Image (tube, rainbow, N blue to C red; front, side):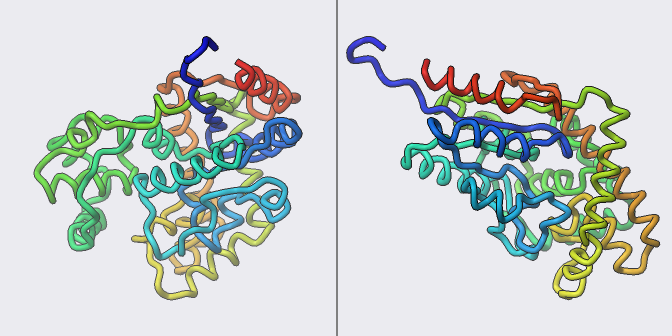
Amino acid sequence: MGEGAAPPPPLLLVITGPTGSGKSDLALEVSDHLAATLPVEIVSVDSVQVYRGMDIGTAKPGGAARASVPHHLIDIRDPADSYSAGEFVRDARSAIAAILQRGRLPLLVGGTMLYLRALDQGLAPMPPASEAVRREIDAQAASAGWPALHAELERVDAAAAARIARTDAQRIQRALEVHRLTGVPISQWQRGTHGAREEFRWLRYALLPTSRVDWRRQLAARFTAMLTAGLVDEVGALYARGDLTERHSSVRAVGYRQLWQFCAGDCSLAQAVQRANIATAQLAKRQLTWLRREQGMTVLPAHAVGLAAIVARSIQAAARA
């Protein structure tokens, strides 16, 4: 660096990928490799791990992992509360600043792609949620189905509809809500925002499956393991609270929604498991589609041997640059 030159922006590390690709395990292994020279702290990028009492179905890091490496943005909300991308950006920025202040590297780990994009590109200030409008939209969805509401979104905001799946209830609801409250399409609100892209040197690693068939089999086996670990009881405890419904974002999470229907007596356990496996595969497909559109990702084969050492060496090289 020349005399008087500004120091380079701080490093910001990202390990992302679709569900079941081994993000958390890789992050912990990378952390072990870097511990002596470049200690890291992990910032969760998971819209469901924020909720307390939702551990098994979210594959939340256990106590030992969280004791060995500091984790942030886990267990910060009650399942009855909402948590938005805007709140994530605020909380993630705060965590990142504190980690850098401690002389450590922030490592963002998770598969909620909307959160990563919001941090990178920014979010426009939009109107707060309206419970009345959301109830109205939920009632329409119960009557006509979310694909019909997606068709309505296509009429009022074709750009948003092109990015949102016909079954993505949460995002369809928010896009319609913003339009009904303001008369302005959400895609227009989202243009011209400022994110953190220029504030950091981003090192982004994306874990992608090498075999779709094997991966789907692994996802089904993973869900079976969650059931064995007590996922039905975990969902049953949430159901027994009495203050949660399928309108809450936490309950709409993949796996939880389907077992909620079993707890409510709307289907058998076998049917719930089948629906959960289908929903998991659909989520994974959406995540893959999103990742393939992202720029600046270093693509890595999920679950490959020796990945942690490779990633650690590339981080060390970037830190020396």
